[in-house]
Length: 173
Length: 430
Image (cartoon, rainbow over all chains, first blue to last red; front, side, top):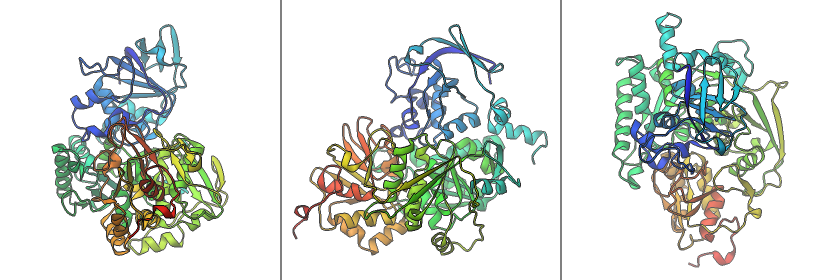
């Protein structure tokens, strides 16, 4: 996990579901190129999340409303966002499986924070300091809580790295 | 109930909500969309000769993209199916192949209980969010992603933050023709799509006692639509009879203590419940059918892990016996498994539905996940007995999908609008 993440902000409202992030009509959802191109394709916004020219997203940090990632357990949803170029999602709340997928895959940092932002944040520069656990928008700094026992998994870069480290050190057989 | 189950699964004498623990998995289930990606992650991380932690505790089902080719040509779907077959053979685990081209043995959430894999007290994980269906049998079932499943395949365990439990006491006598789909939509309307987020929903009360197994499955199946990990119903004689008729394996019944603490208790008397309908584009946009403005439809669909069980098909058939689907409307019926198809055939339900103008499709997930006939076309409006009505989930994103019970879907197909009312004049004269 990068200690400092900097980039432009995107905004999503409440209840953005995984069918919007990686829609079923593109099933089977295979390959980095396809996933990056279709990420949030059904979320209508101006500018769109993915730049049609580059087929990637210029937005590193997604601010979202409640229950971000609700619906299907498909982990093509966080993959799509990560492959498109995002590294962090700061949401008022996450759907459980989406949050778990983010933690387990180590591709996208899910920060739950009851933030005050809306569409006005789109395009603004955001800095996330994962070591000191804060994010900064313009001159405002927001501190977020730690991940408790999940910190070890996140610092290892995901569940499988965490397990392999434990196997390597003999903690588990 | 869940605390007892997960304490046992984690090897702890006592656990409490909020604790993050690793739990042993009793059964891991995956399907054709996920086995290939899971296998890739599994071999990449645990070595190309890696073996499942226990081949007898893994079941693979070809059900999700099995009839996508009826809708559009998808070579990758064929590849994913081959990946499942290859992994099942390499690992010598249990798997359910298609019974004919494009014809699934059944949808995983229906098939596993039918085949005796799901028993009270178990911890079951599946690469599908509707794995919570298994809570109808008094076991902890929950959905996971492919990375997590790769870990389960190798280690036989996974982490969980122990959930709080919400208790739903459902009392009264269910009115005639009101189903579990109406109950869970009603609950969704009350608590919303995040009302159960990260929690377990435990159901009990006189209404639960009245519900057959199929209906209990519907209730638990849509707990995930409330954001919950799992729906749970304590096993009773009905559960035990069902399970013991399908499995000889031993199991341990777990029930809540009389003094169990719940984060919140909801009490609903459902004696006057009317049919419920969820409007686009969320399953919690619910109103009673009498409050719904007139909604003309051209598509109607009865199927999926939520609406393709024998009880669902029976309700639909009984509702429209002697009637005919309106011109300009397509009604699709998808039995959720071969056992259901066979029984529905024997009992005459499929004949009734076919005579009414319904198309009986092959078993599998199909249109529910945009992967089979029955999907919404551009600007089309439909009423579906499935679990989600997100934009673009079951067809074109410009389409509008309403959720209702199989009975309401069938009647709506006859009337070309969402309704639960049929009159004599609609009967087809022989």
